[in-house]
Each structure stands twice: as structure tokens, then as C-alpha cells.
Image (cartoon, rainbow, N blue to C red; front, side):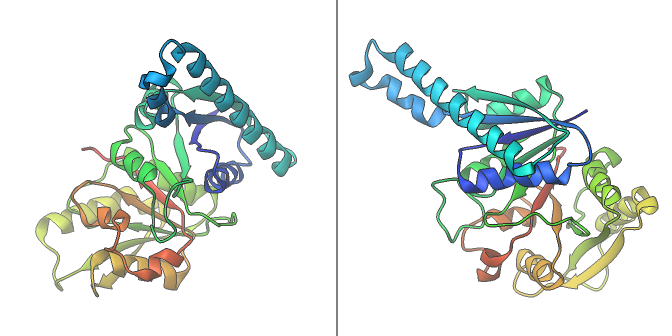
Length: 282
């Protein structure tokens, strides 16, 4: 049975991510772990006002979190109608990224799914601070980031964007290949070039990827860089109406620019395309 971990801050976007993931794997029984970290509220425990009341406050925060997690679960079951999935709820005072990475190991998590923005994210941001931190720090599992205000759509058109500075293993690509096969999707391997001829390293890495995916009928899509590689990719996603974009996040590659404020132009603010972030080897 597949295990899907879904962090939530009880925002609408967080619920959309939970619903999207449940629909994505609706034909396969999965165990969904609904996780809430109330670590951001624990700072109150060190306030002089709460001296001698820390245990009481911690229990109060824990119970409130568990009640809201249960409400999320019940709403999902009601909205799905019927489901093959089972559910766990976990409330924790741990830092969100730490809780996620510990659960990935402990529960053998196959996918992590979360909303692109939480309760406090500003409207113009492509991705909120919590999702950005998770993307930077997640280890051992793919991360599916679901934009706000998105309706579930079967992913038939996929993209995989890379600069091919590094090679990819079959294990890294497995989450993308799994979704590709599950929905008989068409997958474009997107490369943004600056020069007509690929540098040797990039060419070797590209050829290796095409060899790994030769049985999956991935197609290569060359794009000429416009304002920036990040903008070029997102313009293509928008134009071709891709249902999901897969990337491998590295802290210092051009893909990281997709997450930075004021780097990607206004078009990205209107894009409602889920991002599948494949595990890196950093």
C-alpha cells in the first residue's frame, strides 16, 4: 500500500492538496497521513505569561490540532463519496521540515503532497515560505506542490524540465514515470538552450535520461531561452496547458528561480499547474 503524507495548516489550499492527492491515486488503496505542525505557536510557552502553564498550553494546542486534522479527514471522506484509502492524523510540535523527514523514514512515505501557499502567504507569491522550506529540505521522497484555487484534472500532459547539469538515476525518475504510466500520459523532456550545441556534460546527462526512459516514450522539447530559463519554462507550461511539471530542485540551479519572488514574471502568478519535485542527490 502506498503512503502519502499531506502536511496541512488547515487553509483552503492545504485542503485542495489533500483532495488532489486523494483523487490522483483514487484507484489505488493508499494510507494518507494528515500532518499538522503547531511549532509556530509553541513560542508562546516561553512567554512569562505562561510560566507554570506550559504543559496545559501544549496539551491545548495538541488537542486543537487533532480536532482540526480529524475535521479535514472527515471532510475529505465526505467529498470523495467512496474511497479505498485509509487515514492517519498526526499533530506535532516539531518543526515542519523535521517532522516530514522523520515520517518519510518511519512510515516509508512514497509521496508528500502540500499546497503551494498557506494561510499567511501573500497573493502575488508563486509559492509560500513553508512550501519553499520543504522543497529545499525534503529528503527521500518526491514532493507534489498543488497551487491554490485548482480543480483536480487527470494529468495527461506532463513536463520534465532540467538543465542537465547533473545526471539522473532511474530511482529519481520513478515518481514521474509512475504517474506517466498510471495515466498513459504524454511527457515532454524540456531543455532550455543558450547555444546551438550542447556542452559535453549536459549532452551525456540528457542521453542517459533518454536511455533510462526509452520504454516510457518521453519526447524531447527544445526551447530557446527568452528572458530567463525559468520564464521560458513557465511560458511553455502556460502555452501548452501542461497538467503537471516535474523538476529536480537543487539550491543553486535555475529551477530554484521558480520559487523566488520577483524573478519569474506575472505569467506564473496565473499558472495553476502542480509541481512534482523529484528527490535530489545533494
